[in-house]
Image (cartoon, rainbow, N blue to C red):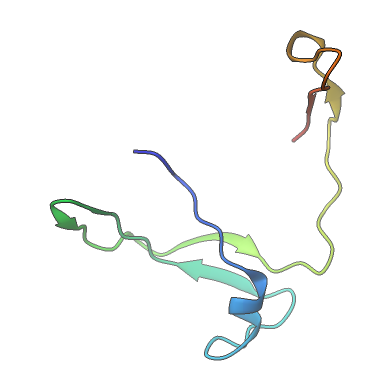
Length: 77
C-alpha cells in the first residue's frame, strides 16, 4: 500500500455537482483498487471541513536531528 490519503482540489467540492459552501462538512466513502479489482465501499467517514483559512499550526518546533546546513526541519501538529 503506498497511500492512505487522498487530495481533492477545493474547486471540485465548491462547484457543480457538489456546490458545497465554505464551512461545510465533507462525508466520503472510500474504495481500494488493485490488480484483483475494487473493494467494497467503506463506511461513510467525515474527516474534513472546508475552511476559508486554515487553522494555524500548533506546537511548532525545530528538529535539529533532521536538519543540516542545506535545510531545516520543523514539526507541528
